[in-house]
View 1 (cartoon, helix red, strand yellow):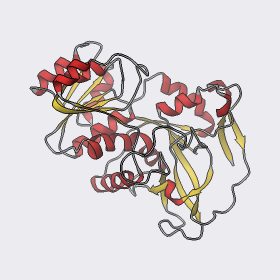
View 2 (tube, rainbow, N blue to C red):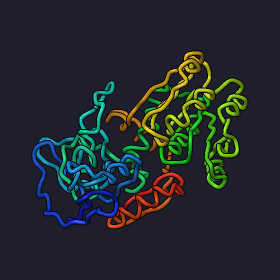
View 3 (cartoon, rainbow, N blue to C red):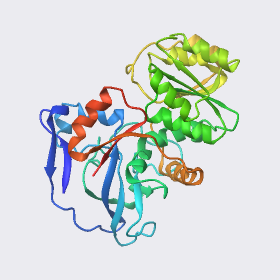
Length: 334
């Protein structure tokens, strides 16, 4: 079977397409999955850039979707032919967060889904939504579940709430789609007027070009008459101050990404005055993914896939991701 791993000495120029032995038949509690798609996340891009010798040979990609080819003894949840999608934290099944690192995450701490076949314990997967193709389903593992947990799991989103989503990447577009489906108002920021137009076509109520309006936090506060209920904060230190301005008193900021850096100043006095909840989060648990899958089937949501690449084009796909011209998700199909 084909797989893509990080070769020596690391980095995108050294991703390696390999032929690996077939993994065989599943054992007790395991399923064999023919992987048909994956999707790219910023986290995968960071792993692919590593030069740490501990990661050399690692099969990449956290997201995987495909078809169950065989089930091992004691497996009752899945049957041959079922469409499935992987989970980000394979051992975090339910309840509060139990992990604070990436040591168990496929494509990082363990081998991932940039390969044609995998055998894993059944609880590493959930059923995929029946209304999605494999590439669309693959977008749920990381980006979809992150947005779902931020708004529904932690944020307790309800109809009439207001949501601010920064940018037009996978998490923010999922947040837009989930929020609109649940009757919320949504504000989207971007530096591209073309992307903002696309966001409006998906239902965004207000859009802001943050390059043309660097004080966008005040603009959001003015538009909403006091601030939004929820902020999908994917920028990190470079955007957090404006997000604090944009959130209402006692609102909720989900700190999801660090696109502007891993550390920086936090305007603590402004956050304290807002009495807002600033919550860091990394994706979510298996139970939340199952809830999200049911919701997607019910509302008929289709993830926004900007472009699809072949498995052997993974390095090119990462370079396209780095160019930040995409809207929504980039996927692999194989």
